[in-house]
Length: 99
Image (cartoon, rainbow, N blue to C red; front, top):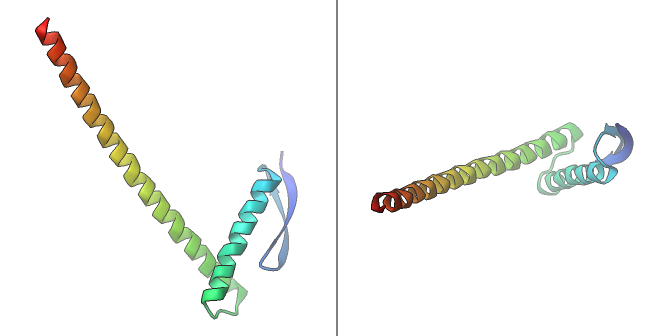
C-alpha cells in the first residue's frame, strides 16, 4: 500500500507516494540532495533546473558505470564457472576411463 511521505529536495517540499519504507524514501531524497549539493559546490550554476539536470547526469553516469562493471564481473564469473565445469568434466572423464 502506498504511503505519503514528506521530503525536502533542494529546498522544495514534496509529498512522495511510495510502496517503499519511509526510511528508504528518505535515503533516496538524501542521496538526491547530496548529488545536488555536489553540483552546486563544483559549478557556478544558479538556475535550479540546470542544477537538477547536472545532478541527474552525474547520477546517471555513476549508474551506467556500475552497471557496466557489474556486467563485466558477471561475464568473468560465467567464464570461471565454465572453466571449472570443463575441468570437472575432464576429471570425471578420466575417472570413468580408468574403470
